[in-house]
Length: 103
Image (cartoon, rainbow, N blue to C red; front, side, top):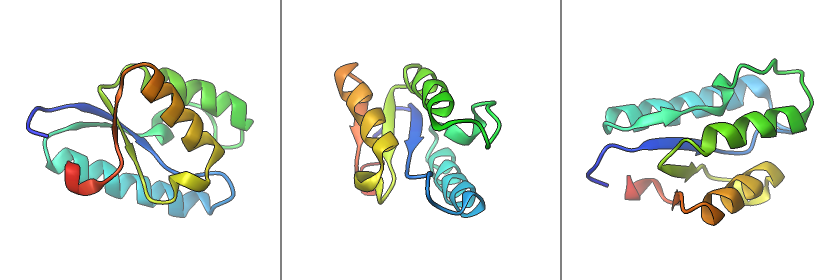
């Protein structure tokens, strides 16, 4: 990718240690920033951690729809939320990035 893009970060969250996930997403965010992109971290959705999954998903989808691309973190295949985000991105013409080497 040569042009700067606004990239939503998608990765599994539910069922994992939340602090570990926040660290992993922050790592990807910093990687995208270092490549000149504008990352969109779903943990910045303004919704309290303890809110219901559906409330988070509504916020995530709204954030995603404002992006040029979605980056799928490893393990996304096992996450219901990631699959939903991928479906929305694909359906709405948002570029899907499955491999970090494509960044």
